[in-house]
Length: 519
Image 1 (cartoon, rainbow, N blue to C red):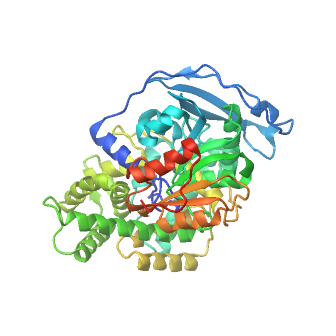
Image 2 (image 1 turned 45 degrees about the horizontal axis):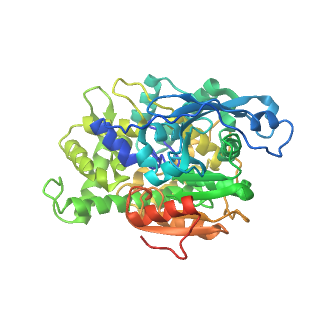
Image 3 (image 1 turned 90 degrees about the horizontal axis):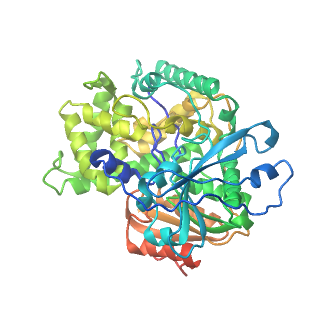
């Protein structure tokens, strides 16, 4: 049964969301096998700050991290946090950390989140430090990656084994999309998935919301020895950072939120905005593709968009079979299309994949979908990003069970994004049977009293539309907007020197631009 992820970010689009700010890096590494290397700079311990917290939180805030070398010049450690921040005595979760120590005049720690929800900050730093942050930041900060609660090497949400996950992500629904039978099938499969997560994960499943993760972030700040939090968050990481700033405005140091989410947007608003964003990115890809000699399309952009829509509709009715027996229907093909749309650097690979599908070959589409879903060639899964994505979103948003309302929403999304929008609807089905229901009211975040918070937005960002960055910068009492005029998901360290200079000047010197530089 196909995964029906609700919208929200980072790992992003409705049916699957990558959400890591390093999607282009992930595509290129998957195809080339190249990884960076670093110098050995690990330190054995960290000295926590003295915090005025309640007695039941003191054991957590006073813990001392013991860093051990863990390859390529990095140090790794594990922190403990309360399972339930409202009742710290009920249990603990583990938080996995990796650190690259500052090579120059150290300012402090810089915690980095790559997105998701469900993206591994540990892997982001361990595997792609130079992609995550530029050399000037590596010189002045200890760069710290962490897996949030429920994710990866931290206490993880666990649900299905690899075989069941294959069926869940790649299976074909035996009914017409949007029919009563289809809705029943999809909803039941999501319910079965949630039940497996509850059985395998226990009480953790109800405690992986973003507010709890933000409170973990403050704990990490303190035990790393920093009076204030210096933070770089990409995609979903902007929501985590903004949530932190709302909870602890006086603890905000220098914070950059790149590829921003509008915290006041509902799940439906997020889904529609992302459908439109990826529709525009697909159009931009085709406009570029049609100027080259290796493009599988001819004619106009509009005609090519129609051709892509027809291709999706064709495999929705008659899925293609890969050499390993798995099927490529519309949902899997959509995942394979969206994966390289995160970055223009990956557009040539999208052309290769689409041409192969047009010729009836499913294997490259499956490979792209596997890259997005974290599936290895041997059929195992390298992370729990799918499980974490679902668990966190089901707690962070609210969902409604009325089928008529779902159909109205789906129709509106399809109208707003005619090519890919028809496959973005019915996200409510993912969470209406989830074992734990979210109660967070979506609303604006102002973070009154916080130091300046830099919000970076890309005008052609398909996953976190530019309007969200404008909205978040306006909401934050101390928000400062930096615009990158270009394509791709997130901008720092992957667009131009104007953006990189603005971000690094702020994080290193505390200097924010007097006005939006419109990079």
